[in-house]
Amino acid sequence: MPSPDATRLYRARHLVTMAAPAIEDGGIAVRDGEILATGPWEQLRREHPAASCEDLGEMILMPGLINAHCHLDYTMMRGAMFGRGGFTEWIKRLNSIRRSLDPKDYLDAIALGLSELKRWGCTTVFNIESFPEVIPFLPESPIRVWWFLEVMDIRSRLESFEALAGAIGFLEQAGAGSGGFGISPHAPYTVSRDLFELSAAFARRHHLPLCTHLAESSEEMAMFRERGGVMHEFLRSIGRSMEDCSGSTPVELLIGEGLLPEGTLLVHMNELTEEDKALLASRPGRYPVIHCPRTHAFFGRKPFNLEFFRNSGISVLLGTDSLASNRDLDMFSEMRAMQDAFPRLDPEEILAMVTLRPAAAIGHAGRIGELSPGALADFLAIPDPGGEGRVADRILANRTPPRVWVGGKG
Image 1: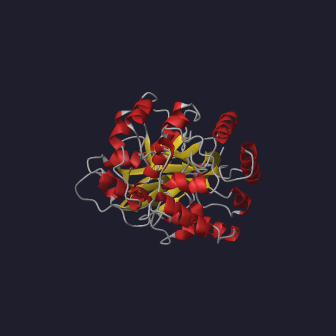
Image 2 (image 1 turned 90 degrees about the vertical axis):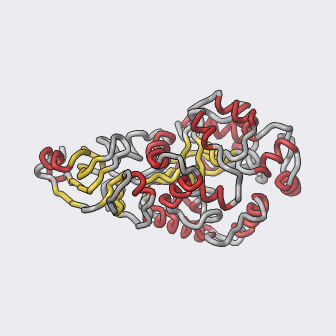
Image 3 (image 1 turned 30 degrees about the horizontal axis):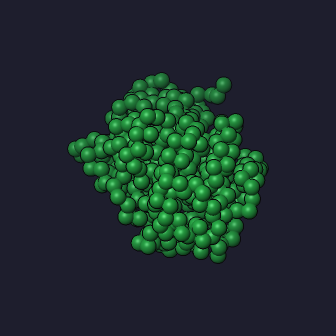
């Protein structure tokens, strides 16, 4: 058993645990990288008289933020991309830049992105890794990472099982570190039915989370539903078989045909027909949806279907996407963008989108995204200006890089 001296107490003007109402003059007890207790400061002092103490002063103490969707490979593309020409033109430019980069560029980009995430209070990220071969060479991450190994086979000469087996080989070499792994069949326009089925089977067998980009753009919708448009012509010109463009929507192709297991993280979900909505509403709670507000604005997309998802019991999470479609990896800015787009949305619900909900979506409710006994000691402290209004409003308004602890280490 650890000695009492191994316990450390942290006090702040306000404690936000996300597991209970905010506490004024509250604190947490940390031992061996986990939260031992939370509560009013004087109560903690009485219960742990031998613990060392740190008074953080006029601060808000809260859980570390969780970025539910990021592409760290593209951190070096800040300011290099534009969304005006449409999604397909953006893909072409992205691919052009990618061809000029080597593995060291991606390693540097990932390291830079992880540092920026931590600087702005993110202690966990779900990262889509397009180049899984670099993972064994990464230095230890300063935050927790779930590496979603991206697979696609539309343009590859590899058979579907070879594409997946290659990604899994790198997963096995790398080890999970302080996070974990998942599989990310990229999107229905780059992944065959066979590879979706194989990815789902592997995820079920090994209890891994699954994530895919779905219904992202009007060009994707036109490709599948109308058998035409700029994406259809581009992919056909590079040799993609267009047999699956049969009049169904992307949602009907993947969810309607049962290719995605329950719990699959669905990224974007911007283009939905009424039939898509009926299909999703018949499966409430089964598929968390990840929204990236500033990437949404970057492409000038029509309003996000938030009210439909909320009314249907579908959990909405937030992510930054990549610096190929965003200006930074600041989750506070992402929360403010969500608030600007939906002014009536309760700030506490927005906070849940970057704490409790992504933790539950990844199967780690009670371990990350909250400060409660048994949770990992991933927390941050931001200035508390005080004044009128709820603490949640002041959190969303924060523009100061916080102090950050991961596993109890600052």
